[in-house]
Length: 83
Image (tube, rainbow, N blue to C red; front, side):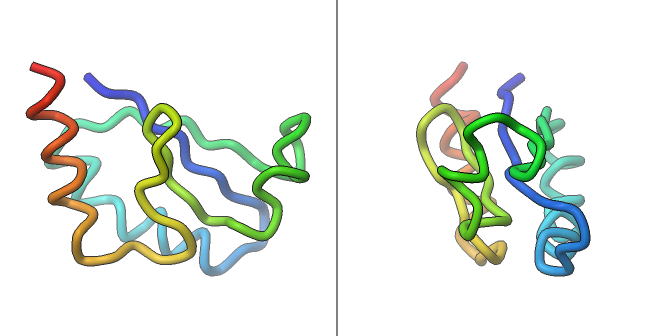
């Protein structure tokens, strides 16, 4: 199983919408997603403060601000490459 990082912040409607849009992908791929609040994680605010929401796998950004149509394909390639 692959582990992803979702950078977010409280009271962020765009973050909530993006995480909700990930629901079908979380089910389809049994994704493990660590939620990281940029306002609480040391160093994250300086690095990702205006870039939330964002989904990362390792050092690779998979999306920023909005879930796009190509995200499922990118995640599928990650899973195919991990087997």
